[in-house]
Amino acid sequence: MHIHDGARQSRLSESRLDARGAVAIIGGAVAGSEAAAVCAERGFWPVVFEQNLRPFGKIEDGLPRWHEKLRAQEMATIAAHLAMPGVSFVPSTRLGRDVDLAALVHGWGFDAVLLASGAWRDRPLFTGADEWVRRGLIRQNDFVADYNQSSDDDEAVGALGDSLVVGGGLASIDVVKILRIQAWQASSRRHGRHSSAVELEREGAGTHARDVGTQPTIRLIYRRQKGDMPLSPLPPNATDEQLAKARAVRNRIIDKVLDRFNITFESGLSVIGPIVERDRLVGLRFSRAGDSDAPVELRASRIISAIGSLPESLPGVPMRGDLLDIEDPETGRLRDNPKVYALGNALTGRGNIRDSRHSAEDVTTRVLDGLTPTWSSERRDAISSRIEEQWARSGFGGDLTNWLRHG
Image (cartoon, rainbow, N blue to C red; front, side, top):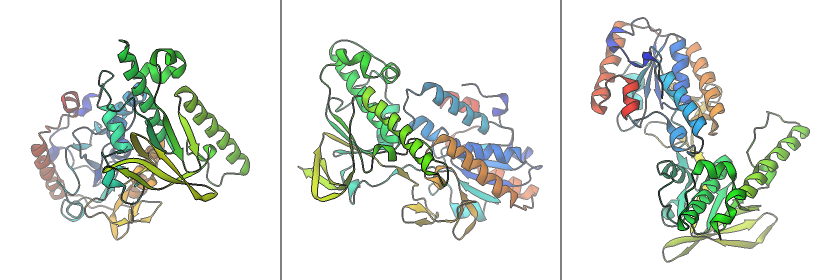
């Protein structure tokens, strides 16, 4: 990955006196890096706190690895934004563990705190679902992250068993593709052949059907109909004609996936609860739309929940139920926290890359427009000192290029 020479960050205490103010950004991926770029371009000092060693978030962990070009492009964009002159990157620093929200607001001297922490917590599939995680139930976020950390040569546990995927968005499409690709690869290995995930995702079932033999059943369950699946965007206040067009596009998208990857699709089913045997989740009970008196039972060796993600509950961050407690949706301002704002997926609830980037740009611009900071060498030096303490703890030396090359 190429990053321009500005990645080498100069000593903090010598380089920030001309800043208009300082902004803390929690999370360094799509939204966080975009916010950092906006701050730097406007003359503010963005300090990006990233909980992981690397700043790529769901681009690295949540975007299936066959998206080679998109992953490389987005990672390069993130890295370039974080390497801009004036941006300070602080890795391996988690809110609530290594830094405290109240301290960032009141102690460090930041003019604003931007939460670009994303949405990493899976929505619960049913009440008490967490009890069955890794005992028949798999979370979509964990499943895709584990897949991305594996290789085509790794054996996928349970690849030849039947699977049940509950969901209806793009994440659920990624999951069923992964499941089928893993099953194809497992069958091919038995015949001494090797196929890459990139090839299989591109070519689909047609080219390889004769090579893989009998395949497990992979079911995708959605509570509504195909045309309702959020696979393509809708404009605000869409007309009937626009709705009809969007449904037609969505039908084409899902039908292509079902055909190319040999997926069984069932619509109009809502989860009622679990089917448990021998202390393991072995299936789900569903109600069918329009016929709640006749429950449907479906069983599988693996059940994957892909019904969406929620922001994690972070210490000091106000929540309203499962969501951040947002007082002003336009600016993302959190309730009773006049200096703290959410943006990107943490605000929109949508994992779309473009939506996250646009949200980050819009919210950050609004926040900066409302700031009237009073900058001083004392504030600069206090923040610099604290950043260098975090750098020393994590082993980061200020050289982002070298860190990403070896991290």
